[in-house]
Image (cartoon, rainbow, N blue to C red; front, side):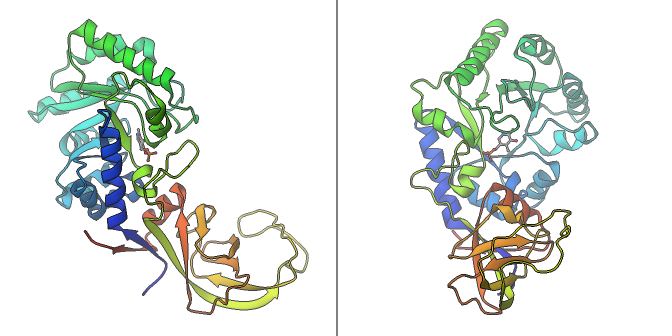
Length: 355
Ligand SMILES: *Cc1c(COP(=O)(O)O)cnc(C)c1O
């Protein structure tokens, strides 16, 4: 079979999705399935739907349109506040978008009115991670304007932590979001459909909290695909952490020294490399490189060491393993590696264990 390829195990993804939906559902929290790390792959989207997740979210309109055009039967959510020049397609192809700029919401309103439709929005609130969101002190004034806009329905409020600033979602942050939700509901006499507390980093909060408050939604990507929470990257019990494998092929295998010889200057990427001396070793070159995958996010499934990589090659120390030209080598991927492999046009997507 051809390489480099990423093997995508549908049965394992479905298992993870069902278990997470059950777990979060046990305390009344609904799960939106996030598809951005798999570039809105319509076949993977179908696996999520078959696992009972009916709302899918992505940060890019290209990915949402890919799913929409493939006929994926879900509600679509745009996770990133809309790019002003893409407003028209946001209204056309998504049911809900996450927003933090009133001027953008006004444009959404214009297009929604023009198209005789209603577009739902979730207002994002800044709670310290310092990526997107209104400052909490601006929330009520913004709600006041939003509920006056034609063609716009305020579907909820949300926050995003542990993405840019690495800030932990805990009882204090979730309590703050809950109290903002209650204030908005009381002051404007409305019910928020979504109080969306975060992402895969909310697992530890969820497991330890005694009161989820008004939080009724999470947007989950990484835990579904890689079976981990994202504060410590610990595996979540009873989930698969190996639903994806990167498979590469040996293109050269020789006994060579472990340290380059000659005068040391910059490598292909402008770094001055350093190597430990292990004497003569079996060095294997794999036909895969940085144009295929974020190599620093790969972990070999066999006992070999990655020594380095360039655009089109990974060099490994094969240690005790007799890697021959043409042998395949399997790797686990972290989030960055998964994102890059799914994005790279050079990596073949191979689906296994169809449902
Ligand atoms: C990517 C993203 C998520 C999902 O994050 P995971 O760590 O993959 O669960 C949730 N919300 C927003 C706003 C995002 O951008």
